Amino acid sequence: MRSDTMKKGLERAPHRALMRATGITTEEIKRPFIGVCNSYTNIVPGHCHLKKVGEIICDAIREAGGVPYEFNTIAVCDGIAMGHKGMKYSLASREIIADSVETMGTAHPFDAMICIPNCDKVVPGMLMGAMRLNIPTIFASGGPMRAGKPQTPGGPDTDLISIFEGVAANRIGKLSDEGLEELECTACPGPGSCSGMFTANSMNCLCEALGIALPGNGTIPAVYSKRLQLAKHAGMAIMDMVKKGITARQIINERSIRNALTCDMALGCSTNTVLHLLAIAYEAGVPIDLKLFNEISAKTPNLCHLAPAGPTHMPDLYAAGGIPAVQAELAKKGLLDLDVPTVTGKTLGENIKGAHILNEKAIRPIDNPYSQTGGLQILWGNIAPDGCVVKRSAVAPEMQQHSGPARVFNSEETAIAAIYAGQIVPGDVVVIRYEGPKGGPGMREMLNPTSALAGMKLDKTVALITDGRFSGASRGAAIGHVSPEAASGGPIGLIEEGDIINIDIPNAKITLEVSDEVLAERKAKYVAPEPNIKTGWLSRYARMVTSANLGAVLK
Image 1 (spheres, rainbow, N blue to C red):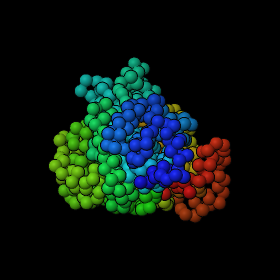
Image 2 (cartoon, rainbow, N blue to C red):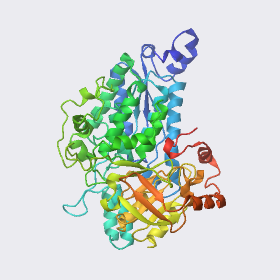
Image 3 (cartoon, rainbow, N blue to C red):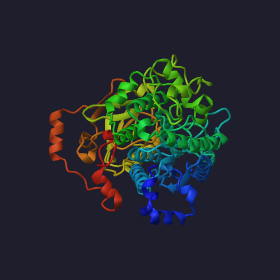
Image 4 (cartoon, one colour):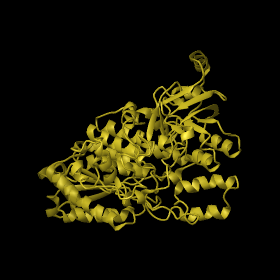
């Protein structure tokens, strides 16, 4: 056993003494040690119930003959961190989480590990750490939140984005103070990751698609008893993986990553999955590039329009058959590798045998998709020589191609102020720069600006491009991850007020109507601004972080 490194032999008597101080018995020392990596914290709604999930998993491990050792990672709620300095720490926290998992799993060489994530950066952070350790690993998330009740009888369900957009609607007199308060009190009805196909649920679904989580991991609501049953099954399954010697990198490899990308396109996942899949693939030793996203998107039909793309939410996806039903539809067209192994001990093909759609409002059949191409698209052009990303499934048809004057802002705050002041008009292209991995630093999400535009009914007439990121909850022509970023000398830093920007999502292009000669003149005169953060660990992060097109990993 891997744990014998710290517990076997006479020379390990001091180590065993320290273990005995925790209450472990002689019999238990001989059993496999299973790390239980829990991201419980009571300030994050997606994580406030994870203490119970951890207890259930630990009990199941003991019953199956293992010895569980629980440890914790940090967890940032992107919604709570949104719109202030805290958001600079969200993406950066991914690296701390990955380093924490690597540290605990190496300093205390566990034989296997179960990871309990839920919200945005915790899932990829734990996955990155798991790739480094390469021991038997299962992911068992906390599950999605239920949707909020409709504000009007027969109206759509509500969620976190309903509140963000409600703030903007309130500012222009389209929603009363009472209506906004009702949203505040009802749109997030209990524990779990926010109920749309936002980043947290996207990543938990992709864990299932990668084969590193049990079926149901991505979609079973947090408050359902089946979520607790899933946790028990994870505790049992990890012991089987230990016996068979199945490690994390045997599950997550080039084949399973392509499967995950295919599911990503079919589901219409968050643009943040681009960053995270790039980073996970890098840690798995099978680096991918942005071209692969478009290659897979071009041949993968989009089967789901969950919020923000449509009115359905994660409980609807679960009730419709969940990820296995989506995979079964994709398999009909030969779009998945069905022979890849999974943590169930069976292949993907065996896992989804008999799965089918139970509600076509949540999952469309493969022969009647929302579109013949996937939910994400990578764009290139003189603004983004190294690429940028848009969730095209959440873009109105009339904005798939757009041309308009640039409205340039050097921070999220100044852009929001201009939007609320009525300075942005139909046809404009809002440019927000110096919000990238280095420039932010931390690559803040732009949910506030996109929600402001949507709440003021500008999301179908105004585009927004940024070297920052977007929440999975963002909708409209929101184009992010522009690479290289402004702080690294990227062309987005050379755009001037009034420049015409052409966006062509179907043809994967984004172009600034300015000649190479003029851009060269501007670059010669360019003076980089002072860093936004000069102290603390974010200043170190800014020096080490790579571009968004490389997954914003540290090097």
